[in-house]
Length: 555
Image 1 (spheres, rainbow, N blue to C red):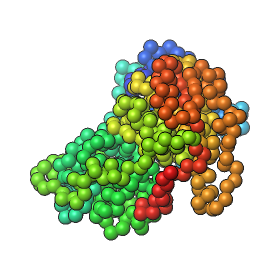
Image 2: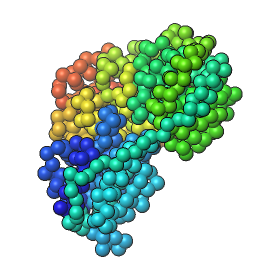
Image 3: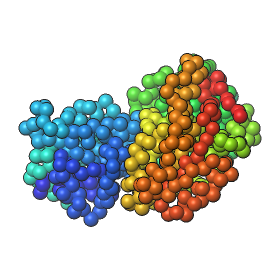
Image 4: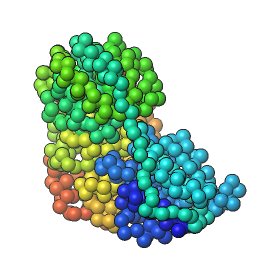
């Protein structure tokens, strides 16, 4: 059969039911057979980068792999930001790009670019397949690599003559490649429990790797068994129920919360599972490390000691490690006597940031208070970058895992809408994209995809008419302001008309009391919707350079 037909058969056998892409001459060999598939849905996007964001959102919400596909040249290079976004957040995606015929490689042919080499630094693995006989083994390996260990995106570049070549392939003999995840050593498990027993104020820090491993319930059970306050990283938001007695919130210099930072700073031992200790979480490393001890569990060996050397490093799967720790903890039978564990519900109330502002222009905090009240715990939220993302991380209440889907490591403007689309397609749940006015203009064209496919994504614009995060950085770090004000976004520019032009419901909100009714009308419209909330341009966002030096702003 044709190599392209074999590729589609492999997709089906690997469980792929959705492809997000844009057809083009360089990939039409594959599209011929994609169009014949009875099992795979295809959604045509308006920009190639959005295809990858949608496939990433698909996985983040559901845990199921999806494919992003596009043509050669600029189509392929538009994939790069999406690949980077997935790669840094450990999101597996199968990205397939078209390519000129093999005889034209390296000869500056039309729309011929070495996308495998371009994507190599940001993808988990890349290939340019020049031998048709290697198509089947390459795709089988790509699926294994994307899922194995620390997940990530893979890129397969297919010259057009390879797509159209005849190869030997029997679908009945194809079996997805298996892989195993590393288990922890028993001596490390015993030492971990012993170290927790010796500590005065130990805490459990769960990262996005716990969510990826599907181990959040077990992590909470471990915390209950050992009486450990649970702090989540930004990528693990929703990993513990909001009102759980041991929920100690987030820790970090931007998307952190006062309770998380306090409980962390009061700790003397940190059991970090599936986390990376990256900069927005840690801030100043000397403050973060202090005199406390660290146990770091990560499935990827290179993550252990990358930022700082832990007292105990364990290279193992998060779920297998948590399961082993539970067995050992129950055998040991001792609980931590953490001084603040019983006080956490009260601390959450005392240290919560103020959100009930009743002012005009609307204080952005009020927007998130209304989102928390209006949407249920099954709602999916995406957010891309900037001051709106930080407010979202600080103030949004997320009660379940895989409901909060941010562009964490990349902080990618334009991620929000296509990721929300992919998340809704994958789960059938409502998605809400929360973004600033400037970010809204990045990939706004993807609203057309939502409308054409009747996927009622709701976009909430926190419109402060500024590059808000950059304004704040200029103001406090450099004492100047340059080209960050965008007053036209609250006047001259009409986002309602933009949204209506893409067949969406839309309205602009000026009064805080009108936010709930606007959201209600958006939902009842049955369409994709844009709610443009006009906010105070001068509201600053709490942040700082170290966990003990986060500047709070109250208005």
